[in-house]
Image 1 (spheres, helix red, strand yellow):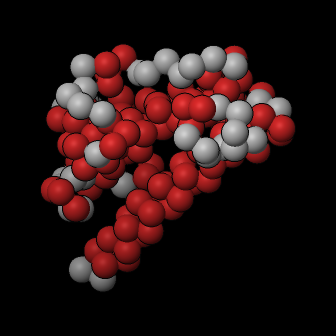
Image 2 (cartoon, helix red, strand yellow):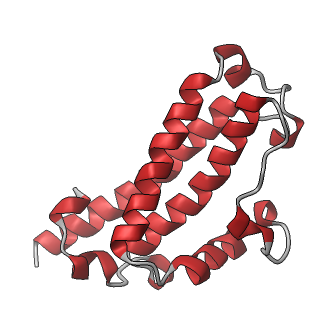
Length: 149
């Protein structure tokens, strides 16, 4: 679907917080990197390694999604569409690959990883799916509204 859109449609701000489709893809990639860190930690049975871009984050990224979203926007807004799309695509495939390597028992155990605070690794997949679905629905609505123009 995104491949059918032109560069201007992808980079023009048309969504909440004055974001473009590219900014949304960067946003999804940012949160995806956290999911990858969790999934990798689960696979290797260790503490998650926070992505490098989050190390200099002011405050607790996991306690304030609005601040984290603003941080992602600020630090990745100037990427090209090709880079943003490629980063997201590679990350998505990596997340799926890691999830396929974690045993079902480890995926479903809500008490196994203290750093997930009572959630399971399977919840990470569900949350990622729901996050993508939320933004997909907004994109579909926008595309339908702009088809009529």
